[in-house]
Image (cartoon, rainbow, N blue to C red; front, side, top):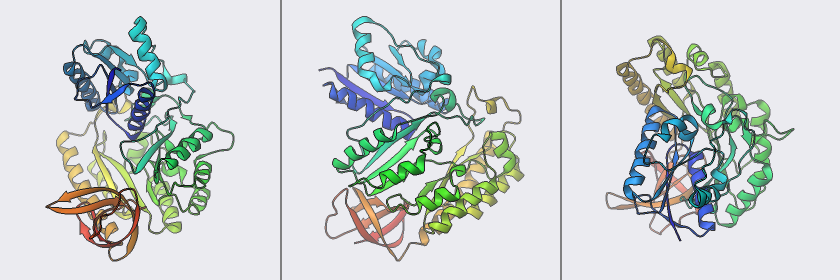
Length: 433
């Protein structure tokens, strides 16, 4: 049978979708090989979140054709949606497939090979169908991502994703629950719910939202942990927190997108909340779940961000006290309103602000981790690593603390162990059995 190789760029949703496409090809009898091996078909699941992501997508497409000049090179996904005319000019690319055909990739490719009929890359601005994908196994054998939603209606001024992913569509609860049950039977202890705009899940349903789905997933036998992907602070209402706090399988780790700690910058970004709204959401979570981890994303150097506004952001994130902050220097993305804004911040200034924000983030992480030194916590063992000739068993707590465990007896992967947390170590904590 023909050999197929995959390469994924971008987010967890893309990773899930690649695993779903791999599942399809395996079911049809194709051999899945590594990307740098010689294959008959190369499928690159592209990303377009930044101009650099576009460049990396083009590089991997060219690399695929170089691996085997006689192969079929397929570009699929977000970059295709955003710039299919540009990709048509790449001689290394044989076939373009948009985000709507990932669920029937085998049929699309086989049709092309037989008759040279190419699929249409649809305009997603009016597309309202959720295209179901399933996975049978994941490359991470202890944690499985489950995509429950696609699309975004937020139109943040720096972001191209609503144009590449289209409007909000939600997956049916029955499909999600069935896949979750299937993964539980295969031994997965933890599932991570992911989507382009997770907080909007169920918005087109009559009376079924994310919290209702979580309550149903709580009942699935075998699934011991349910972790949430990135959320919006607007989701964190009193009712949501009251209900989620009763679900012991839901991990107390909430990644709440912030992007800026200054209200003026948030408004220019077209974010739908204020710093006061954000702080209220955090307070609600901590009131019900005192040991929860609050993590976030931060963009520094957004167009016209002044030094004073950046200092406001620094003060705000320190006041919140995040467990972890992912700091990004603003990157101009063609096709977005922010790319046309005047008063672009210089690369030097963006770099300086990034250094300051990262330093603040490191201090907050130390403070967060320090709370748990000297106590026992349950850790899902994920892998064994050797560092400086010493074996460690690495895993995470429910609130996403990375733990490096020393143990006289071997610890089995995909088991949950009670670990004594002893001291700060590398990017997490050192533990003993």
